[in-house]
Amino acid sequence: MKYLVVSDNHGDRQILVDLVNHFQEEVDLFIHCGDSELPADDELFAIYRGVGGNCDFDSRYEDRRLITTDLDRIYVTHGHLSNVKFGLSKIAMEAAEQDASVVLFGHTHQIGCEVVQHRLYLNPGSISQPRGQIQIKAFAIIDATEAGWDVQYYDRSFAPVKDLHFHFSR
Image (cartoon, rainbow, N blue to C red; front, side, top):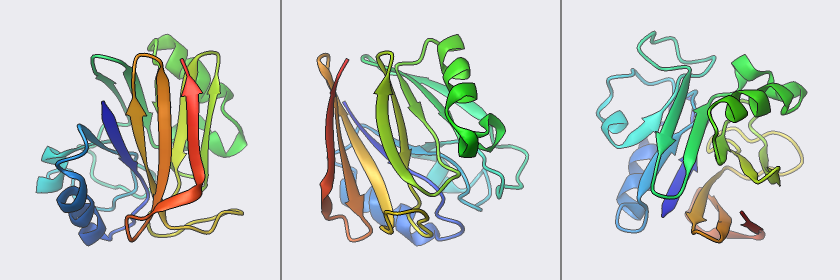
């Protein structure tokens, strides 16, 4: 299964539309990790499985969400309530409580992915306002198989970022 993961578009609705138009035939699940700054009833959220972030003021957003696929239990949260700017300890406890195999979050606007104790943690970075050492407006696609996860980051023009491709065993 393929999961497209995006976060922190901060009001840029068109990029979310463009992602759907470009990848709808390739991706099984579109996931948004918050700070869209769109209303929770925007028609895009019939496609994207999303959560609210610290810049999403519509109270209809969920703070956390668990998505179950044939291969994974995916825990999604923006990250601000899990203090991800200070490490993964809190979000790791939350994910363990949910028995999640994949943990997706945004908030920091910084690209990152790693596997810790057989659990994939991924931040797609920000599609609009990147921060940190990797200054690429980015999103990620996870290709999940029974053997593991293949993670490819893409830039805003949908081109794969050569040095941001990872494979992790389960």
